[in-house]
Length: 70
Image (cartoon, rainbow, N blue to C red):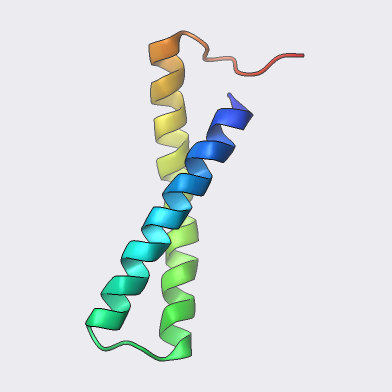
């Protein structure tokens, strides 16, 4: 797997998913610290499979499925 690509995609996916879940929690009235922490934890966990999926998709499109080799 292409680990540098995964790290970039994961950081983008984590930022977006945490932001969406945090805004959703605040808008729906869950504005206490434990609720925000749960939204952050859920965003981090959701981002792992999303990052893996899109890393494999981009790797198959570019033909570089093996990833970075030194």
